[in-house]
Length: 129
Image (tube, rainbow, N blue to C red; front, side, top):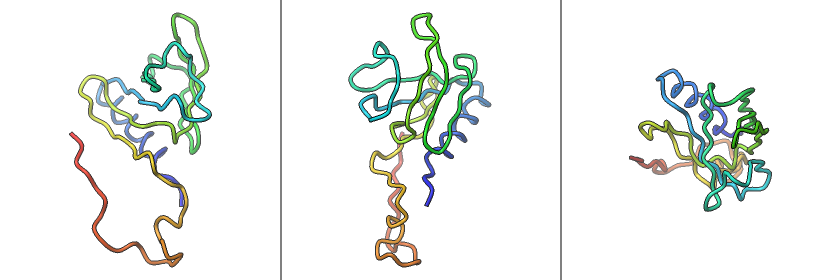
């Protein structure tokens, strides 16, 4: 089964921009494959402004988030695996979505017995304020 994370990221990015707000990504900078300037990293994380006015060539595909942005006045390419993105939110009001760090793209997660029936029991949902 495909991961829902890139689809949700694209939808939330569009919603935040259409609302006239500034989309930010919270990224685990220690995740393998994260290519961001060292100066932007704080406590193993980096917050990236992905507003269309702040970046060029933004692409959120199934595996990577890539764009070009200015850091300290110097344009630099940024590449972040989708699995390293911990959240996308609007800077002005904090509304957005956090992603679980244990999300798996393995289809066996949906059917633990390898069968075609969905998992039974209570849904695993939380309210985040």
